[in-house]
Image (tube, rainbow, N blue to C red; front, side, top):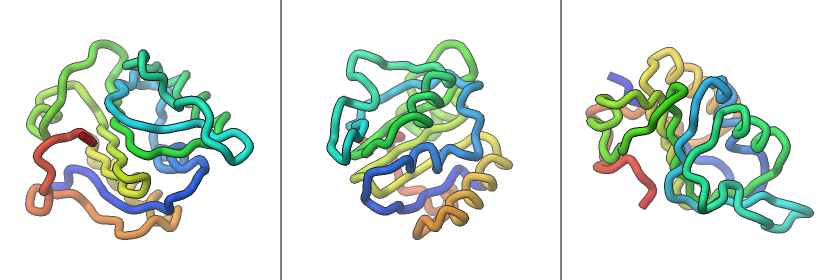
Amino acid sequence: MKRGISFEIPNEYGTILREVLKPIDTTVFSWRIGNGESYIVVDDELDEALFSEDKKAIEGTELKKLLDNNKFYIVSADLQAYPKGGFTEIETYEDFIESHCELVLLVVDSCYFTIYCRNKETIELLYKNAADCGFEDIEYITEENDTRTRLSVW
């Protein structure tokens, strides 16, 4: 059974998070912002944090505006998409399955993306999108090859 996908992207400034999330209507979700380090890029220089440290959640419309109107650089990220409403603490894949969370996006070392997704059709769309974007080492995450013990970047 497919749990999600993983892939590598180039280590550069840009709009990669917007490109990765393209198959998803980000506006229909509330997004929990976990630990991470990412910056808005202004004049090819790192500027303020993409997600402020005091903000632990963002509505989908606000996330879309943020991603559509900025270049950014992501060192690490931990985002979780929920139907409008409350968040739950997710530490493992089993927690994810038992929660209302629809998607978990993890970025490590600026290049390594992992996406867990509840909806199987969305997994296929994310995989096709990653291939269309030219990302490398695209793989499905399955029960057999999932080595992750925690769904977090730290």
